[in-house]
Image 1: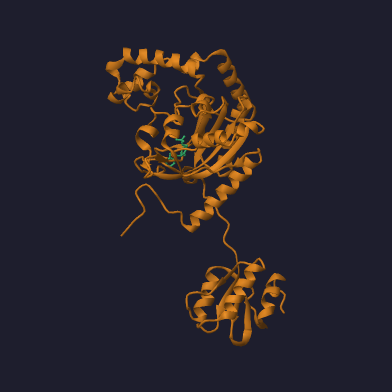
Image 2: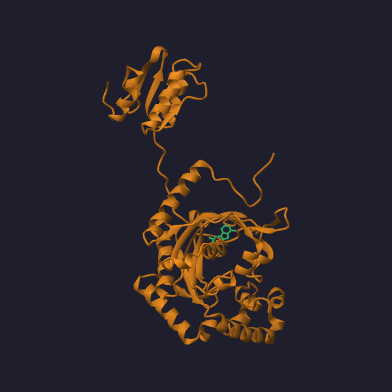
Length: 414
Ligand code: AMP
């Protein structure tokens, strides 16, 4: 039997209905702040991610689904949304629009990771990006919007970790300092950390290994090395969050998975989740646009995993599907009047379903009950219909043309 590929899942109708609620909340929360939807292609030039996410990242090194398009071009299924949105910003000359350009997306992403609860190879993310503003209010607004979304979706036991990565120059100097520190303690570091001292020394803060962790507790910290402007920017972001009543922990070891972040970075986790506790996170990426050959443009944004949010949410109830009318057949053979009645009812704005399974009349009524149909029209010969009110149980015969007006009048008998 052919099954869905490992690390992927089907979204069955009940789950789709729940996700519709998520999408409605996204629209409400982000729409209220002037964010508008954008969708980019499922695959992009591999180079976009190699440059925009960073060669040294796990994503680019190990997790991309990359293929040749048959014409010698290397394409990659998008592993994240920021680089594609920035690519679109440059490609469509959005720097000519009023800034910042505020965008959101809700789509599928692909990473070749080891599947486990809350971690898939194809997953869904909602993301928001504000491109063209360096103001700390933008960072704070995006964090508040993500907090509002998590609250609207009743995501449980959330925590916010916050830090600042400074500018690329500060980071570069700090990296050298950190590398010197790591080399000094090379003997005490795990093999993995040691092998990546040059490639990605910041990852040492993420290590699980006990000895490495103990070394890292004395490591120099980037937050202490921020230049005056960055420190001031960060102080303003924090003041705005404090005013907004958003609680956060300062976490100078916060290392986001992508290379391009500058200044503010943050991550929401949920204690209601297991090992994969990251619900959503983001940061500022003031240097990314230039990496993608665009005009120097500041930007900030976040992405949150739909599956993780649903896993960590209290039962998110989707409204039940409404069925105004079930069109039943008095006799099981082809009945064009019934077909036409169902169609007319839909054109009149009703939710109408037609019997399609050759059930007995009794079976049809049972089915109508199961789908909570408000009315059943049993279509007999010569266009005579028995219209049954499923709420009261009353029924009466009526000419077929009276059925829809009766239902639209909300119950008055013809
Ligand atoms: P990232 O782009 O890695 O910061 O991811 C943002 C959010 O997307 C995470 O906090 C998760 O909620 C979600 N996410 C990332 N990777 C996966 C995955 N492999 N499966 C499911 N959700 C994911």
